[in-house]
Length: 353
Image 1 (tube, rainbow, N blue to C red):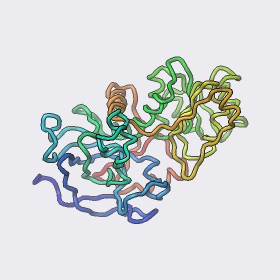
Image 2: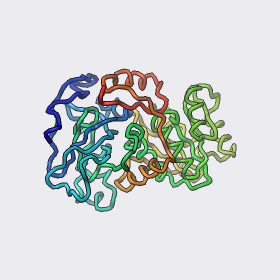
Image 3: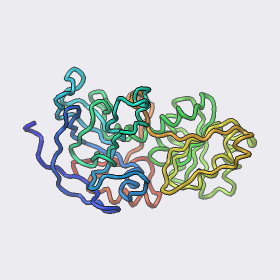
Image 4: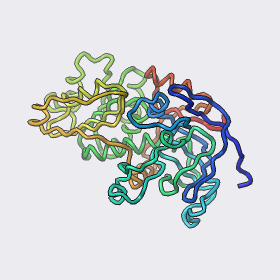
């Protein structure tokens, strides 16, 4: 503990829309917690929602944001088993910081639905700091030598889209439309889908995102900014002008795509809602939804087992987020890029600068 500093740099939300780069105390781990030296932290659209306090979910204030932090263990709480964790282990902090472990959902391996869940960078301080605490049961583990800047986006973006793909129930050889495919979640969703044997139709806006999507494995790119009939184009890209893709993964930060998806998804297909645009609603024609037996599902992060599986794809080299690394002090520019829909891949913060 003597080598751990008493103070650190962090990005702190002090009021809605106001984030300050400042010195704060280094936290002390509780009995079942780990203190992790955060080396890198991905930046998620959720972090922008947290900054703006967009959601009907109480947010801690002041708050250190962030929930994609990768680093090394520097201290163990008194009840953390030394047989499972060692100083220097490479680990990651994800959105689910802790859960009760005793409710019906936790007992069934659906801890993401736990009513007592604490959320990194939202209800508890997160990873936009140099040292952060997390419940030992919920950290992700990485092999020694893992490039932690590459690993950081797996902790939320990777886990979230991997769980969404499982929720879609799309099978190898089937097609899936990924809306918002050029962003941080989408860039990983394309790769997970390809690794799972799916044909990917990428939907986003702009040539740069189109080039990125195809490079990552999308077979078709539909540019919503140029399309004259998006529904028809997506159906045609699925190989059948009448049927459409078997599933749709909605990652977009805007409402309109959520209203379009049931128009082009195949009969008996599944629409999976993941993106959380502020104040948005999902609507669909009742007749079509019933007679074409369309399923509309929400998918929200994943369990500890899902995290293990999502990380395994990364460790085996099957997925890798295209990242752009900037200093922790530069997060304001990242949020500006998000607001202007200019993010291709994932921004990762280097906490040393």
